[in-house]
Amino acid sequence: MSKFLIVDDDLNRSNEIASRLKNSFNINVDDIDIAHTLNQGKRFLRQTYYTALFLDMALPKVEGDEPDRLSGINLLKAIARGRYKSPHRVIGYTALIDEVSDMSKEFEPLGFKLYASPGGDYSWLPEAFTQVSYSIQSVRSHEVAPKDVVVVSVHGILTFGNWQEDLIQLAKEQHSDIDISHLSFKCSRIDLITFLIPGLRRSLINRFTSDLTRWLTSNSTKRMICFSHSFGTYILEKSIRKICKTNPELLEPLELVVFSGSILKQNTDFSELLDVKKFQIINECAINDIPLLFSEAFVLDAGMSGRLGFSGICTDSFSNRFYNGGHSSFFDEKRNFIKNKWLPLIPNKNIIQPFNEAKDYSVFFKIVENLARISGCIKWFYPIILFFLSYKLIF
Image (cartoon, rainbow, N blue to C red; front, top):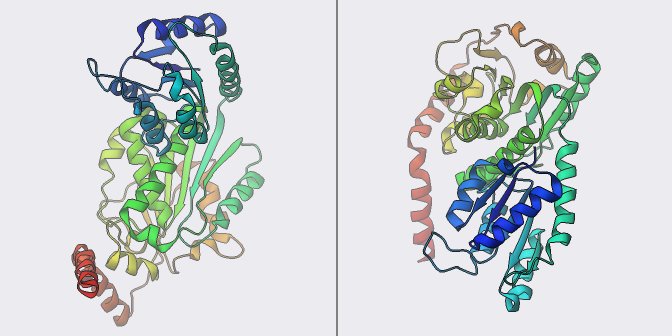
């Protein structure tokens, strides 16, 4: 379904654009939203993905304020940063004819089109409507029958995530009777700096959340199953929480989330999520996972649940499965783990079986693990200490 937003403090112009949209494309009036201030427009953009946004470049922040010529540019930059839902097409226009060329330098590099629109002049609308027509056709082309299942995969740091392609190829070979779509989130060779700094992590989470939300808004599927590894488990879990708060209806197809080598904390609480949407969680744990000791000891807001499991009662819908092996042992050369443990989950989520081949650690590893736990309790002080030492060295 195509939705449109007009953000314009000129009531006559906004009504005229809405009327011409309705008549030109046979659009229901309920599918056209109109805002007359910047803040009203932001509220609409937080809630809905629009086929096209008509944006007056000079808007008052609230009713009664004077129009700010930079308000449109600032809103577009906020959309580009992922703070609001990104429309398929943005049509910018301004009555400040002398400033069109200056605005265009800022506006068009973002991938949009800017028009001069002095009072009462609508000669620019036919060209703008040509772009709108293309966007409507593009949106409608995605409105097809729902997929049987969509498989979402998210990889970890310092890797190209080759297992993602292997997983879907094996799944399609083994389950050729199922219509499977694959959403593989790629950010190849995510570096350690991004992993270590919470702010940089959030940028990846926002990107994945935006991409997944856009796909779920434009497409339909009967079932959704998610697989993730290492840092990918963090991205996936945080994104599901964000969507659960903003667009919980989009998670209706979600049936199963599989974590492997997870850096999430052991005490991660899923009750809030499961209260909103019931789905199954499998946490695949490798008890000899060395990198997770580092995660527990030094990485803020991270832990080693992929080594020791999540704390809490295991049920039919929530289970830790323990294996002998290291951080990437789930992706053996012949992909036997994927074939034996993950592929059966795609046609039937109800065949989840508990598994525990864990053996006790040596005394050495018990000591190392306890040291990681102790370090994890005080790791919030490490950035402060590092800042203090850097300050002393510089000054």
